[in-house]
Image 1 (tube, one colour):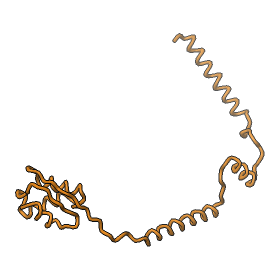
Image 2 (spheres, rainbow, N blue to C red; image 1 turned 90 degrees about the vertical axis):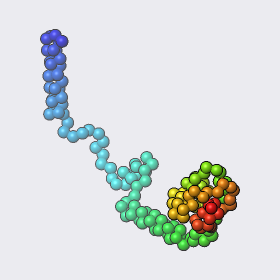
Image 3 (tube, rainbow, N blue to C red; image 1 turned 180 degrees about the vertical axis):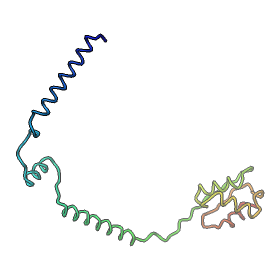
Image 4 (cartoon, one colour; image 1 turned 180 degrees about the horizontal axis):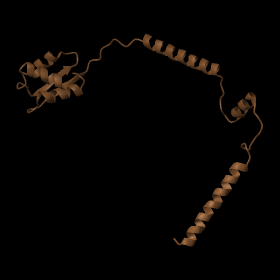
Length: 156
């Protein structure tokens, strides 16, 4: 940048700062706009015409209290509704092939919702010492059977 263009740029900054200062010090003291003071009713009408809903503090608290009582009533009704007492029994046909392990059988039974946890089933098989006694074949088992009963059916 040349010295002449630098002086021109600096001069422009000085002039702009001077104009801004003059407007700041000698301009109007207050913001211009509507000098009309709106009453509370006019403000509500204006907002309502724009689509807003206006409530007083008391009206708002009443609506919240009413909503809370409706929620509490719904929860109370929900608690009075009793769950069905019937137990669902899942039955499955299990095919055990040669080379399957107790973990494989447990995962299959868990997937069929006959047992809750495949790892617990496998641990129970090992505790009974029947991990190597898995018999290939097809078996019908259901969720009403105990783990011991299922183990006695499938393992030697």
